[in-house]
Amino acid sequence: MNNYKELFFQSVEKVLEKMFFILPETIEGDEVLEIIDDFEGSMFYLLNVSYSGEIDGVCLFYIPENLGNELVCNILGLESSDDFDDNCYPGDSIKEFGNMVLGNFMSENLSEKDCTLNIPEVTEETFSQDRLKENIDDWSVLNLDEKYLFFKIDTN
Amino acid sequence: MVKLPVKIIYMVFGKYRNGELSMLYNILIIDDSTTMRSIIKKIVKMSNLEIGKFFEADNGKTGMEVLEANKDEINLLLMDINMPVMNGIEMLKKMNENEELSKISTIVISTEGTSQRVEEAKNLGAKSFIRKPFDAKEIKEILDNLG
Figure 1 (cartoon, rainbow over the protein chains, first blue to last red):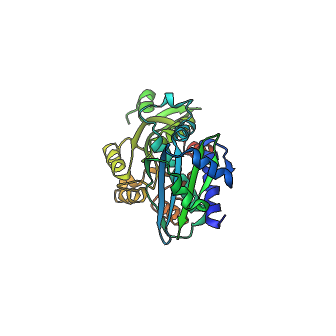
Figure 2 (figure 1 turned 180 degrees about the vertical axis):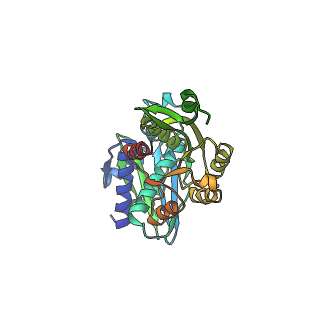
Figure 3 (figure 1 turned 45 degrees about the vertical axis):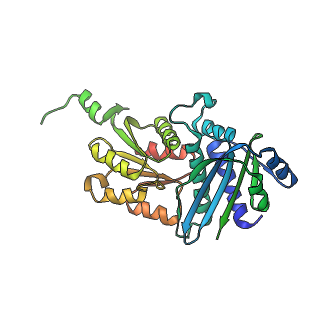
């Protein structure tokens, strides 16, 4: 794992544990390829969050729908998605998740750099294993109670 | 000198607690995330503050509008930095252009915790800067110390 990838990984774990009360388990090697195959064609949230300035960086997260719902429930202390009201929608919690991960990464690793965190974007996309397989070593995968989170950071 | 009945004082300023008049807080929460506004509101309710009204806004521009329309009531601001349209730093600068608004207690709760951003917010009058991800206890402690 290169340095930025490892540091970013730590920020993802920290935010999941501290704000969403989820203890993630790392998935590596061949298991990643098996998992990727299982998700071809499924609907995912694609979260894109970036920073710019003295140095630039872009992070991508693939978040399955059921994990998106769990993030909302956990951060708001709800039992299930049946308890969602007009103020609960996964896109908003997912954006905040991205904000916190990258904000934490910047505070801890780029504190002396003049960089600005940009507004995150969330879209719904069909999962494409080809997109991940092209640069499989760049991606990290976490198992969150049989829900899988895929993410990577590109920085210059 | 006209003496106001305790009930009136209570309605306007707060209430007696342990024999002392405590401040009533009307709080404006500014964050573009409804999730985060909801969490912050829950934490505020858990604090020892005497809470009057909550106001909400989803960016600095609407925050300024709410603040200007309710400047006689709002006495505490909990705000994010990284927001669309007008960010928190720009809003703090706007508030500083108005003597009355510049005196309102402001706590920044933001993901943007680089040392430059923290310093900038504090120079513009923010009392405290809390980095996300936060521990609810950390915010509660800061609020408890206000009250």
